[in-house]
Length: 123
Image 1 (cartoon, one colour):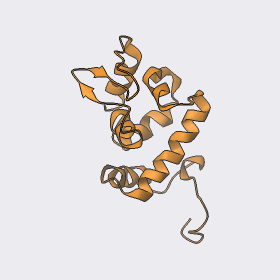
Image 2: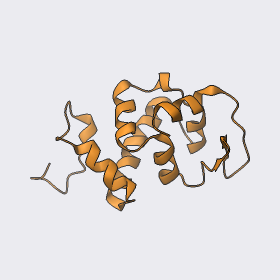
Image 3: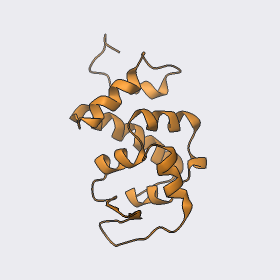
Image 4: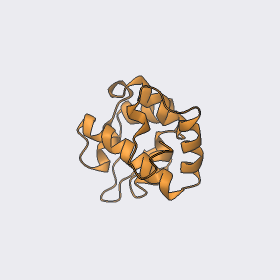
């Protein structure tokens, strides 16, 4: 990857990523580094395509059971689903006593899928 820096590499497509790659990406993502945000956006776009998510609100009904175990591990390395969504889609999630709100409409999500996913994935 270092020999071809202009190629749009997708390290998550390889069988193995470089040592601590996800941990380092998570640290840079937490600092809201533009390159890290773009990398996570690409990765999440692939997950969204796989799950059929066409709008950010689709994440509000994603169950942990829908994610691959490698996705769950990676999401944890990136700081958890709530953190990722709050950076990628800042208007999507607002914390208010366990209520998940969207920018378009206030939506109380009574199901356990999202809270379970957020809890398990470090949210």
